Length: 326
Image 1 (cartoon, rainbow, N blue to C red):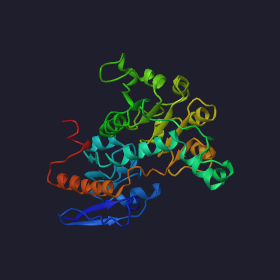
Image 2: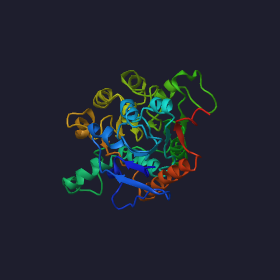
Image 3: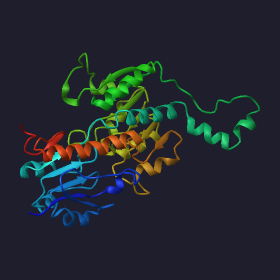
Image 4: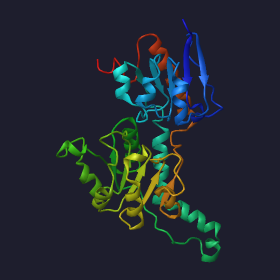
């Protein structure tokens, strides 16, 4: 029998300083720094287990990997994997969960605070000599707003959404969780989706990208934002129509936006988010909210634990495969 073959398609999605080893079960571990779309089929053809972060695993590639039994996702999101194809084949797909439960919420608030207090604009003005030119101890060129007393709308109530809510309450913010669009009237725990858009001073996204959430914030939604809120997205770029975002920010429908994600990563130079880099109330970071040292170590450990559990015939964190339907 051939040895267990484990293939990691995008090892460079993790820092080189972090050691990555396979399970205790005898195996062959192949680490590819990156994998282009045209290389996927050949690289997974003889794999029993594939580890992947952001490489797309489409149905046609999965169908050409007859030995494939498990996909270990080195992330929470699985929108890059054809889960239906995995269900048909009984291929277990396991993701990692709650590993960035501190890192992502902290980055979310870093973006909020930087925008609310216009930190980047003031920093640049100091570099430009404005402080000396003012002739006094301070100046008031850019508006500064408190988080305390404002209303935060959170879309997505998993571990990250709850962690953001906890920090928000410590800042003195009123928190409202948005219900799904089709959920009807507000309940004690959730507020009508459109009402959240209308009444929030800050809106932050913490939901997965799927058929129901893709493009969930577009021109119609921006038009509802009566309080001209900040929009923060540390979840997935595809949740927001980025052309509509550019229009909303440039026309003042929203007061600012902080994004850590893009529908295309990295974005092309003519991408709407790249065109917004000249806007004083926009911050774009390179999908690094999750990358604290502690979060990365937790994620690597979970990937190994998921593989070990699968090899014990007791898979965990399953999002597709024969046990997902049980």
